Length: 148
Image (tube, rainbow, N blue to C red; front, side):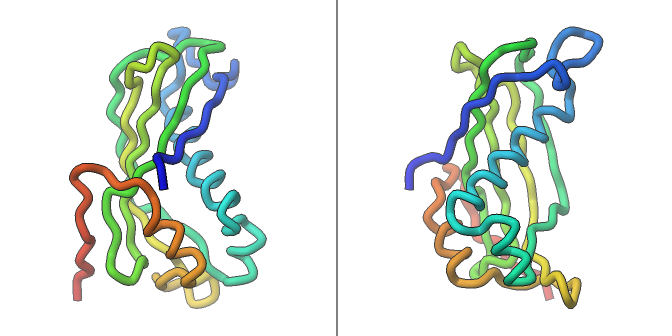
């Protein structure tokens, strides 16, 4: 699968008093890309509800590189940086690109799948796992080894 990427036009609500995109808006766009990917691959909220499984984040780190301004069109990608053999745990990297193709931010998230009934971590159903396995991988992709 090629790199998953979506385009967005920034909004007034994304801006801060310094006239550039507020820090949490970058993470909102990265989350939107993950949700769009899952929805487009049959793993939308309705499907996750039926399967009693959902994503949970453990860590979210943002490295800011360049300002994004009001009305600027940005592109946000999604790459898999790591995953456990059973798909339970995963790591994704998002790049937020400015109109001039320069990287505005790099967002790294560590997450897993949770069983919504038991509230315990779980492997995703096969139909979900196959799409994550096909995602474009980062150059430093590593298998996540679970402890214990």
